[in-house]
Image (cartoon, rainbow, N blue to C red; front, side, top):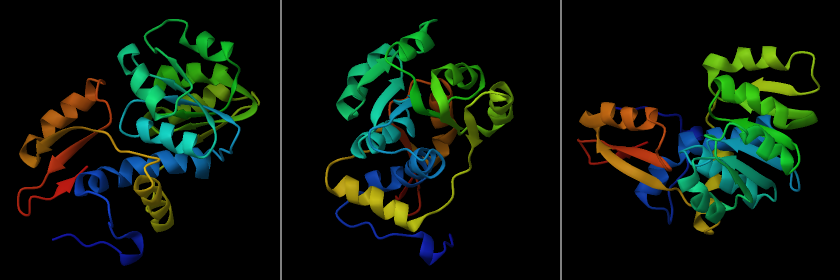
Length: 220
């Protein structure tokens, strides 16, 4: 059995189970990174690293829906996908000069770093003085903070937390058609290791779902 606090839950109304199952963790990570930690405002410019992934493709849509200008890194075959979600500029992270390509369009107010490590550190050069970088991978957060030491850039690590109001706001965007959750694939729970392998290969567009056997429910 599973126990959850009532105040952390919202009712799924007019939203399909697959969309609903794919939304909470990825959606809250994107939302909190952009707005709670990143303090993103309409008219600002945000760079999202790994914009086509499960968290990234939602972050692109949330930022765009709230009036920010969105730049995203992604492999070239995902550029049209991201443009359709609201990104105004796409950069291929395979290019050695991807940072210079971002900066050529102007430095950003915020970086939402969903990659970490060397990519997160390199992205510091994209941030204007007084701007922020919010990094999600905890393993390299301190490295990026150290790299920013002495600069005018604030680096924040984050851990996602449940938030009923934020979930409600995201569901409203889904119902209004302003946001969609792209489901890249679905795996039986017993094949969870295969799902992890697909994610680790770094080429998943959107979210993967795990199908629970007992009640044929979904988690993702």
